[in-house]
Length: 326
Image 1 (cartoon, helix red, strand yellow):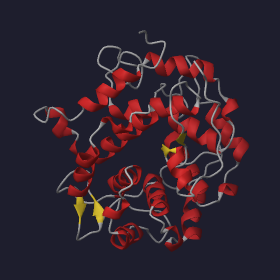
Image 2 (cartoon, one colour; image 1 turned 180 degrees about the vertical axis):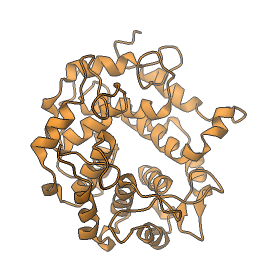
Image 3 (cartoon, helix red, strand yellow; image 1 turned 30 degrees about the horizontal axis):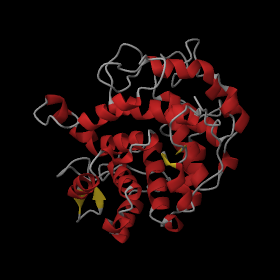
Image 4 (cartoon, one colour; image 1 turned 90 degrees about the vertical axis):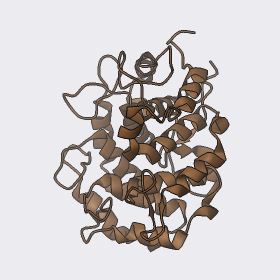
């Protein structure tokens, strides 16, 4: 099998192998990302139609071992401080596995809302770092657990407006330069809040389309190298804006496929680099939005299986390219 097609069995095996060697130094150096990594791996498996490749009960047990009963949030690893990023990942994992009954919804809701600042942005944790990623995490999480009505929407949208730049894009904080990943978190948050009217849609879509480089890959901002993860950040925003036709999918697909590790599985940031689960999931879900054959639809607003999001009554208006047959 060549790298001209998605090596699904190999990628499934790669994800299953992650974390097996707990004596590996890299395992311990990445503990701060562990909850996110479990979500990334699970989402990649869902996109490939292999959700059950990882043990469900073991996964749920790990998620709950990261719960901080006193604070009401989840850490990235047992005994780590609770933070919005792993809290969202924990909620997503439990939702995918139909296990929200494990959640103390009043407590986790209180934890999330406690992190909103007077400006409307969210801090990631009690230490106060702010970022539109955390704002999106809060909006997504509250939506998934049915508590979005408790959010001060106008204050939240007001901060996103402060992050909008002349090029139509959004930054990590007010005054920061536009960045494709921040564009996605702001666009997706506005989609969940039914406030896409905030966006200058043609201007933003043009900025996003300009992220595609001659080799087919996307960069995150002007004058930077291409990176597989932007296959999702850029595509998902264009999907929500219903402007996927503004990029050349026939050039992007080979770029993503060329970054695969054809021996051990996984996808890297670009060809020849070391594969990791972060780029694996975002390469695969990007291909899903492009209608790549054999993949499952992924909702670009929640980055979760589309049928699951729809079953919860949360689907927003977005488009993906038609699923190809081969």
